[in-house]
Image 1 (cartoon, rainbow over the protein chains, first blue to last red):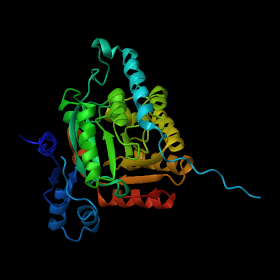
Image 2: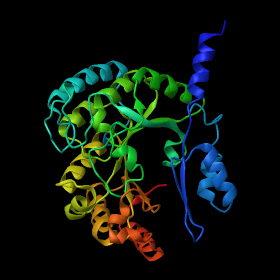
Image 3: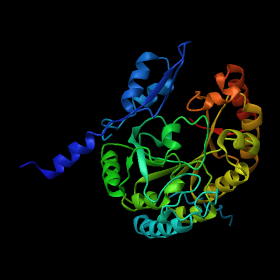
Image 4: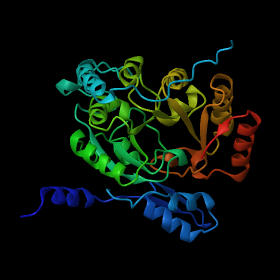
Length: 67
Length: 289
């Protein structure tokens, strides 16, 4: 029999997260509701963006769950 | 002997969960003659009537996730966005859900509190309640607070359009008020967000929030509104809330119904952007990111 606590946590973790981005024709990128994962993607797109890099590498956070 | 002035109490009230439970009960009763926001509709939401926000007695939410897009000092935050709002900002980035109180899924405070606590265990620094506009869902927001650990740092992200009644119910419940000051004059507020008497109401809320919690004021720079909106907002903040944390945001994008307004067909220009930040510097505002 499954542990109810594990089942409950799995259900919580299954919730989906959403970020939105807008890329303009000149290459500018706007984003909101940025998750840790999205911050990682944005940092890869523009490694020079120090502010985003700080968000992507926020320490002491295990992962973006639960979402 | 010279005594230093007492430091502002930034921590929310002790025994917050119990107090929040009582406040939630009072807030629920207040829905029978709803005057939580400054539209002051006076409708009986418990009986199914709705005011300008179209919100019923039971809230829904459209997002609940850990985010890193807010102020650095607040993130990572577990962010809960309740559907519906009392303003009608044509440029709202979450317009579909903010204009529709029926968007999303039903909000159950106990379930959401479990998710929030798990996020805290995994390293989230704060829990943020927002919308839409959370003030219109005060009973459930307070119920949610009552189920959270007393030590959790709680953020109230608001359009600052609440009434004295709402503020009284919120007193001591949130550690930080993250409040928008969107428009610098009532004309722009009426045209872009269909709200009257905006400036007075927001200023009243900001002054109160500064006395009762930590306060961060946000202003989103809008194309064509640097002189008419940002300049008076900046001047007022400098004169009335010196030293308050201000997050001047330059990431406007033409969302939702923004294109109804000619000035929003363009993005914010570098000239407007530079002028806005220069003005903040000139006025000595305490800008944060």
